[in-house]
Amino acid sequence: SQTIHQWPATLVQPVGSPLSLECTVEGTSNPNLYWYRQAAGRGLQLLFYSVGIGQISSEVPQNLSASRPQDRQFILSSKKLLLSDSGFYLCAWKRNGADSGANVLTFGAGSRLTVL
Amino acid sequence: AQKITQTQPGMFVQEKEAVTLDCTYDTSDPSYGLFWYKQPSSGEMIFLIYQGSYDQQNATEGRYSLNFQKARKSANLVISASQLGDSAMYFCAMRGSGTYKYIFGTGTRLKVLA
Image (cartoon, each protein chain N blue to C red):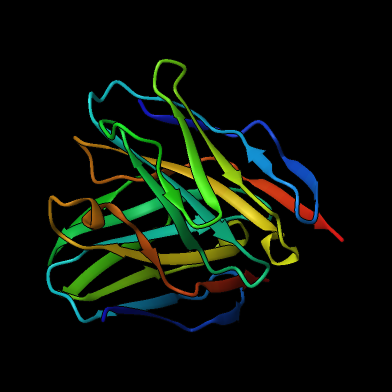
């Protein structure tokens, strides 16, 4: 079976510090990978998605970046955090395929970031 | 551009009663998928139900059913026999056939009353 791991679960960072959130998927190959952010009490904002190693699509211009160094690894980074980067970050994956089951987006447990 | 609209910020329902959560969408894609997710206070996003735009029948998964009205561009979630554990945020989402992107609505917070 497939599982998705996301860490760290919680972190508190000062303004201007770097960020690295990591996500890995097990039990599948060549998944589509996603990073979403959820501000407090709000909906989900798509930040990045990737359809293959080294292929990153950015949805929102900001001081965040994403990388996919391995097939099942997706990393969200920042060189200098802003207060507005606070939020709940969710990694997600979907299976490659044309059947209806391949449509479902499965989420990790999330990483709660507080920037002070 | 694709858009999902959830107009109910919050809803209350009595335990054991049915509740409908509204979702309307807009897309120019001829083929698309519609999804509902549940987010408990823990923050995890739990997939509930999926409806393809060309599916002939409304999707059902246990106590969840999706009332799909294509002409009205609506995809309402119906929860039957509500339970206290159904209290959570509920998000409607969509993905067009020509894109990898999933877009989400702003969510509806459901509170089930004992």
